[in-house]
Image (cartoon, rainbow, N blue to C red):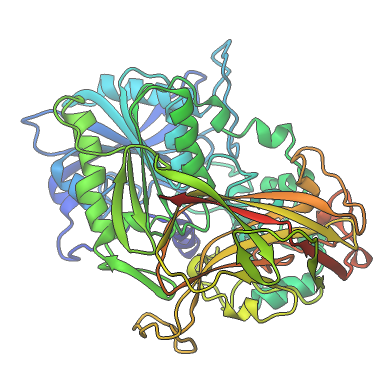
Length: 615
């Protein structure tokens, strides 16, 4: 069971700091208290409280609410590290961890992405906002030496609960940092634009079965596939319904995934973005440009708050995978690409600690040295600051997909490039056979040459660039396509093609070369049936030219002089996403073997890619 907990922590990007094994700083400098705080409806939530031993002054409270456990349990058992960072741990905060309702040592039933109740009419109307309010209220009234200011933070799912805390409206809540925050499970983690992320299937038990009692151990199990070759495993499995033998009906989340394949009320009411209005606490959104799990959440949480509130709202986006900023890695490497040294340490000391110190210790008084946007250029490999995100000095530029070229001028005559998409031989999403952890990550910067050389991937690229070109903002693929079938997925990848004389690096995999490296900068999928509505799917008319728009999340990347910008378009991306049968069925989870058909797809030359370009 302990191994399962370790895997769970890997999934959420748990905080890991280098510590001297002989000395536990936390045990030497903090006292620990464990309590069950009663919520308004009588349900009790387990809460671990770490307070500085130095009681000569008052401290702010910093809290994380989590579905992943508050281990180690027991007042004599201490975490090796507490607080968002080692810097803040040594500065001194009252640090609080809480198991959310229905998880581990807390009571009640767990509800995955529990829906917010805007107009509560009785004590029975509880949600994560009311639980947060009740917890904060208890803490400021009962914990000695607190200064009355509370902050929340969290990464991944705990990031969702940090966002949720904004809806609590407790007057003591002054600073909130949602990091890699989930915002909507139809667009984060398990789905992208309606396509089911099959690569997350193994993580399903984390959110599935209910526990029967208070527990410090995992009550869920991850499947034993008997192989490390995910591509072959899922290909052999065939229809998704054949995976039922691994998850029974007690796994509520698996049943929900199968039953709610469209963006229906089940998903809509669990989204949190629509409720982020008139926010008062200071907010610092943190995310990674190469976060394979939660990129949609941070960018859209920031932009939503920016449009609907007048509070202090800032965003930090670094060259990170999921949760990398909370680690103390000397070198920041994603896959084969190194982005620099001590990048996470810089963030922890100079950005994160400053944010919480300013609003929780200094009451928001004095000079705030943080900009609106602290963003890392992943091409030039350097930090930049801006007054807005995207920066004001950008413009939209359209590039046309024509005869394998990416051109600013469109041709008058309509032509197309076609390819055969075969669900029985799908395009791999990465070259690796065995991914680390239960979800893939490094593919976000992987070399894409293996895909560009396949006949079922069409490639368009610019000439060698004469000047640097910096993309700073979102990307919109405005495709004109057709299929001989009645359904299809459309995948768009934006790639930085390095020059042939690119120097080798020690980070490059032994089977690769940096010469002509095809670094993926951004990618996205659109399940074609949702091209007009995520709620009401509709088939394609066979062989009829059809518009499919795909929004790719923001980038901040400089394509250097001597490089090329490349676009790859394909219709399978396996096993990252599940297989589209390419014949329209009501529910792909229950598609039959005969539904999976080879089809001919066309990409027409009036298709465009709209970039946000820094002037």
